[in-house]
Length: 148
Image 1 (cartoon, rainbow, N blue to C red):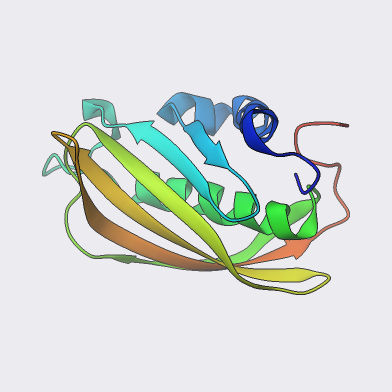
Image 2: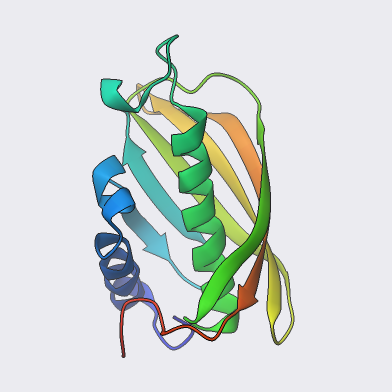
């Protein structure tokens, strides 16, 4: 993803998500993608909630993993994997959508530390519901999204 910018980067990132059955299942959509940041949206649906009607923590964690890994790929190249991440759930997620905003904190040749904040969107207002920190590493795997 490092050579891609603008609309081309968003389209490439969306192709990566579209190749992942779980991302398709939750309806993840890339809205912005650059070396500076990523924005990924998941629509809020009743089948993605837990027993109190809030966005399920597993869906929020998956959304965080997507954003964290995309930012690792922006820094390191497309052949990356998540080595680890942690997430803090700050308040219940409710509304029309969940939006993850990711960035790179630090990157070397083989490892990047990335951050992601997740917001619940309701009536056009965003409210922070979770924050995550991850370590993304280069891996001997085929590039995400196939050859460019």
